[in-house]
Image (tube, rainbow, N blue to C red; front, side, top):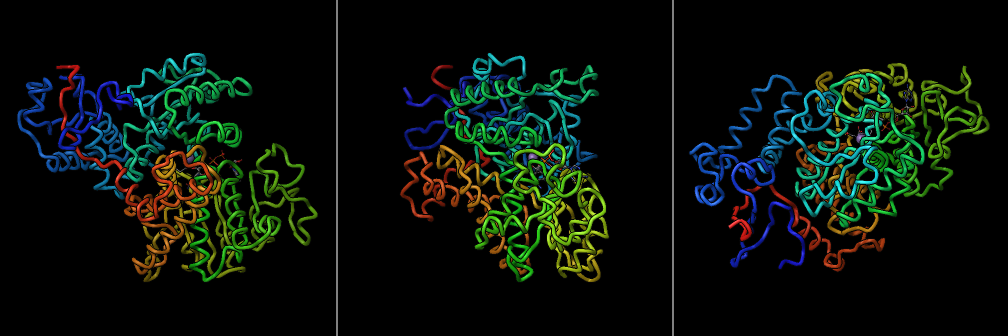
Length: 586
Ligand SMILES: NC(=O)c1ccc[n+]([C@@H]2O[C@H](COP(=O)([O-])OP(=O)(O)OC[C@H]3O[C@@H](n4cnc5c(N)ncnc54)[C@H](O)[C@@H]3O)[C@@H](O)[C@H]2O)c1
Ligand SMILES: O=C(O)C[C@H](O)C(=O)O
Ligand SMILES: [Mn+2]
């Protein structure tokens, strides 16, 4: 009897007497072909076909893996639109995960915008109308007493990484109801493709607490609960039940909270971060990503972080997370908390966050200014608006997390040129249609001076006789490595230091990348995502050990080199393993 339960209800991964890994399956025929974690479609060998009851169910020619990849990619290229490409890849993922990841890894740069931002935004919006095949776990407000029982229906037994959303603020698209499931799926695809987490160790989750979108509630084809969102103590109770059930069924799992609106994001993070290893991607992942990019941008200017004056626009989950990370980065350079705070200005829909403003939330309070904090400031209304903040603060770095397209105006950017020849401008809202400024405009308005990064991918900008690469400032540079590191350490908690270690690691990796490519970079190219994640994972494990939260004894005494080798060794790669009938089926 094996000590640990099988990886899945339908199969287990074992080693034979020669030490060769194989998958022992207890399903056959069509049931096997319909399991995307087992299916090899046309690549099943003659022996497998015979042993597993597949003869007659698939075409007679046995394809090589290479031929399968070629066929798949050719078919992909025939899709007319990006959403069709997304749907094609998602269907492939639901049919044959190994092939999906193999093709994705071969074409990561081309396909990332298809499975992730911006196209995933379209997939979210059309989730109900395009629904085809089940994936992940969904639990609704009506199931509160039954989460544990329902989780038993999930066939895999050793989930390590969960991405869960309540869909209240999906990208910059707002409340998307049940469609948010597409984001959980997309993020986890990156955990596998860029982080090396096995697909059978991941679980996308939609926490369906209802929607406040009347158009969805009125749409008979909408697949989520046709009810207003639950809130208050009821909402907490629902999440408590979810977390408790996860901890019971998957004691080694880490939860990434994704796209919770500002009203719940901080509350949920704090409520659970010591209960179950968990982090909020929009607050912490984005904070780490932005800090790394700002460190790099300052360095490119030949300056320090502490030489900049920061304006963060959008005081939601991402904006406040980033403002906090910047403050932390400034403190690392030796500034006191007060000095650091004085260099960060946070603007929301009413203007600069100021005392007496309506709807201020707890996490915003440390950024709130009093009139007396702003001596000599000139502004027309009750609170300084974005432009007035840029002028009065003499901003040198401007970051957008509002989801409001075109919010940064030419006059804002030109004003920054009075304080610096090289303004740092990061319009980081997703998807592309919600970006605060077009990178091309930013380059033009500053005559090539601006250092620009955007949240979704944008092409290089050609201006004059120069090409300006636009870095993609996306938390995808953080979460796969952070998650894999935390899994490897079996971290009991995701500490702030671990997040900071990920940020510093990203900045360091990008600096090395710039040297290798002979060009200043704010973020690495997507093609280096996998390598970056290894780099981050090593630092995260090291920090988990230092912070006393590393439960995995095997990694505690390793050198950095050994740790790196362990991480590389444990990373899942998209290769077929031989399938054999389990003794149970025989
Ligand atoms: N690049 C990345 O990696 C990354 C990561 C996380 C979030 N984001 C993007 O950031 C945006 C916000 O996400 P979030 O999760 O923080 O959402 P959120 O709903 O928590 O916050 C959005 C904030 O923007 C404010 N806002 C709206 N209109 C504004 C305006 N005209 N001026 C100033 N403030 C305004 C809102 O009041 C709110 O506080 C989204 O577009 C999201 O895609 C990007
Ligand atoms: O999903 C992304 O592309 C990044 C981020 O988490 C967001 O909400 O925009
Ligand atoms: Mn997000």
